[in-house]
Image: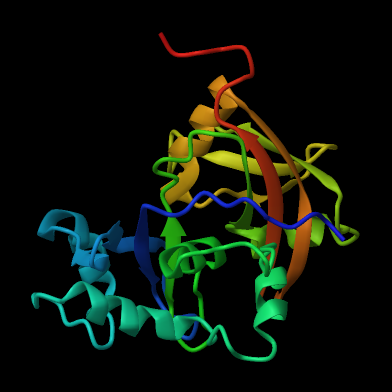
Length: 242
């Protein structure tokens, strides 16, 4: 089995995301709709400002259940609501859940870190949680849920666990100048890094190193998912800021 994440960097800030449900016609762009920040009281929750929230609202976003738009929310209330996206830690199969996302059951993860490291996506809605990598300034391991894999899977029917993959800049991408494509070593495209993380990953490719391989392939037939585990060094060894 691929090595699990045993020494996590605890999440400082993450984004709550939303996209149009699968059963609804139209684009399924994923929008950031709120911020989750670790604080002394727990996790501070706040919707994005009106300008940044506008694209999601125009697509049909109406707020997260239990956390109405425009209302103030106590930190512990927000975390209690969002933590329902995770199985209880005392559930018999909780260790299996952790390993599914490449997380060692023996490692210590805060609730916010668990939400961000797993993505906290459920089959019954279109929400998720995305890590921002704020404070991820030492070598670490992370599992990426590759965006757009369903559009490319037919070109790689024989994809296998632990197969090396490549992260590479895609500066000609018409949707995102920071786009990072994920390909097989042969160059066959498998998808992209989440656009909310792409700029940071792009910076790692410029100043550090990324060593990645296939971790898991699963999901529904209409929406297959590819997970890639990467060992990341944000800055090349021997290069120090001055």
